[in-house]
Image 1: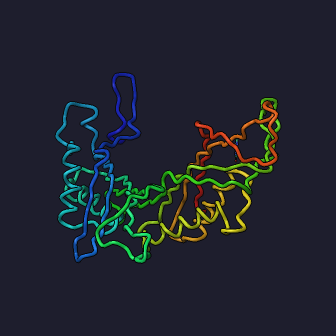
Image 2: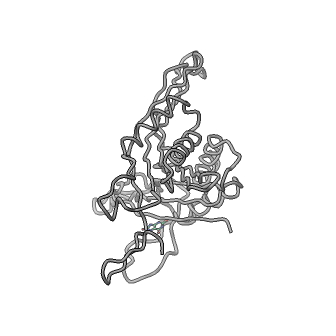
Image 3: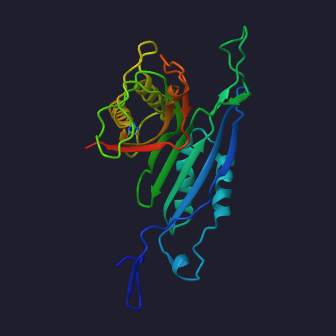
Length: 303
Ligand SMILES: O=c1[nH]c(=O)c2[nH]c(=O)[nH]c2[nH]1
């Protein structure tokens, strides 16, 4: 019987999940080694699971590492060691919690990274990048999850792309779906496809890779899978098939990845009905974007 199984009179219970931590620790780090500054802005959620559960089932708080202490460790470790990569820094923070507090069973972090790009001018200096000025280009959020269990040699690391919104105006069909008595929409040979994509991929333990380079090559896979060749494009027949193909191509491309998860919101762009106004509509060029997207999910594992 584990410490999470317990009995109160005739009633038996099991705590099947417990963790706690600080949310949205915002940290901005500037590497000032030389005139060309390198920056990182991270939003971090910490989570600790303790070996015992006495703080849940009794008034004994002696094991609780308060969430402000958890937050302070993030800033102090950044000051002492800097932040080179998000994955290394996240691993350092988790290792710190595990090595400092012998009663921490699992330390994990969820990290979002702001997409600051080095500033450049659209003039004769085009192509040259500024040493210490940046602009926020929030096309998507880069995510990292680190889970470090006591006793494991390495943490499990996941990366992801959150809230990438893309739209394609042709070469999207949706047809031959279930004929049922409640069906209200017709087959579409053509439609406008607008997706809000969140990908995450989890590495095998201790992958020997450049996480940043891998992120960029996965972003390329995701975009090319959606859009295809710049001029010729590519045909998409459903959201389900589109995200399956993207996940498969990621596993094909990066051997070190164990599984990929995709959550895809599909914003329907409906055609405005001009028929009632007797306005001819030879070209489908006016749409009304719907607010409430549908959602398609897949997780693809290696076997
Ligand atoms: O690609 C799609 N998959 C669906 O499951 C679905 N449902 C829907 O209304 N439109 C779409 N499109």
